Structures are given as C-alpha cells and as structure tokens.
Amino acid sequence: MKVIRNIAGYVYAVYALLLFVATLLVVFVPVWVIARYSEPTRARLVHRAFRIWMGVYMPLIFCPVSRRGKQHFRKGENYVVVINHNSLMDIPVSSPWIPGPNKTLAKIEMSRIPLFGVIYKAGSILVDRKKESSRRESFGLMDDTLKQGIHLCLYPEGTRNKTEKPIQPFYDGAFVTAIRAQKPVMPGVLFNTGTVLPHDSKGWARPKRLHIHFLEPVPTAGLTLNDVAALKEKVYTMMETYYITHKNELS
Image: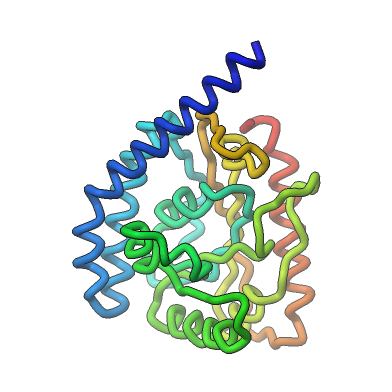
C-alpha cells in the first residue's frame, strides 16, 4: 500500500508541475505587459491576473482554496499581512487570496528562473539575503509599498517550518515595518500546504483542500519601536492558538 501511495504521489507531482508550466505560459505574456506599468496600477493588475490564474490552477490540481475572514479587510485601508510558512505552495495560495493588491518580500534567487522569474518579480519586493545593503533597501521598498496603499504580505518565520512546532518563532522585520508605517497587522493562518507539498519529500505531493483564514487585525496606531516585542508576541500567540485549535478539523 505504501509503495502505491508513493508512486501516486510522484505521478501527481509531475501532473501538477506540468499543469503549472502550461498555465504559466498562458499568463506569461499578460503579466509581462502588466510589469511595464507603474505602481500601484501594476500591483492591482498583477493581483487580478494571479487570482484568475490560481483560481483556475488550484482546482485543476484538486487543491481548492477556502478562505475565511475576508470581512476583516476594511475598504480603503491596507495592512501588513503576516502568514505562517510551511511550504513552497504558500505564496501561490496566500497572495492571490488576500483581498486586494499586495506584494511579498521574496528571495532574489527565484527571479533568475527563466519565464517564471518575470512573473515572480512582478508581484514581489526582491531581496538578496546575503547582502546587508539589499536587506536595508528592502525596508525602504516595503515602506513605499504601504504608502501606495498596497498590502504587504510577509512570512515572519523567515523560512519554511521544518520543525515539530505549530509555528516557528517570528523575526522582528514585519512588526518593525508595521509600526514604522502605523499600519495594522493582519494575521493569516494557512492550513495543509505542508501536507500537499512536504518540505522533506522531493518530487512527491498529494492533493488536499487548502485553507487560508484571516484573523482580527491588530492596530499599531500610537505604537513605537519599543513595542515591537509585545506586538510580535501578541500576533504569534493569536496565530499559534488559532492553528492549534482548528488544525484537526481542517486537516
């Protein structure tokens, strides 16, 4: 039975990858054209393109996405959206399902992949984590993104969760950015992306319904950088508690 399961997982992974490439070729030209626009128009059009793309692709690979908490996004307000990080699938699930245009902080290495790199750059703020100057510059670009009324989508764990913990400890960056911009933090919790594409199973995957739930936003108005630790702890506790409470019902 285990052998059959393993074979099925590899076959499914190949199917999902081939379909990803096929649909990427369809959206490549529109996104390439959109990338020539200036912000915030580019972010708005890219978000629509990504939402249509993933809205078609995810059901085709038998991983439909369910969303809760859209009502927490108030019209005319943008947020620093922080999301747990379990899988390479997190960005294509989270970014398109955030209500409204958004950008994410992304590794520059991925932008060098032919064709995909063009799409990757269109919706991202690129950072070279090996260079201190690039990391400093990324903070300014994130500030600019928020000033333009665009949501910022960040993964405060820094890397994919490969531990037994529900959620890894958070870094300060997302919370420093939110306080500096005086923008609310919107916690988002992803379920099952690590089950579909496990970090320890190369070339293997499985289909499963995915969930992204947005929680009550946490205001930062009046906070200073002295409050970063408390804000980070509050958001972490909210997300960890929600994940533990709902994991079994959604898995």
